[in-house]
Image 1: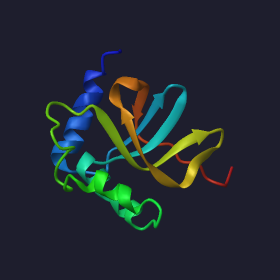
Image 2: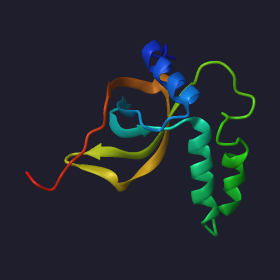
Image 3: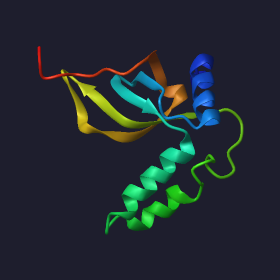
Image 4: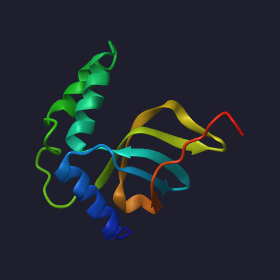
Length: 126
């Protein structure tokens, strides 16, 4: 098990404490490049719950994500954040990002091999 990057933990802690969703970050996790904006865990969980509630088949799973309000982390969790919560995020594959509209991703901080502030955007004009 690797030791999480202290600076990355500090960034996640600041996102959690300020309830901000404006911090853009790009990370490399097991060879995949993920780029997007960070969200506090409670806000991320609430948004995932809303998306699941709209699905007839997946609606029952929404309760797993909505058990914590938008201003809190997972129930029973204390200490520094252990995960990054991305929204409007894409996995970069060649010259495109998947999904095009952005997705919701949860990444263990200890699995991040490299990172940079900011996100990568592609345009059709070259």
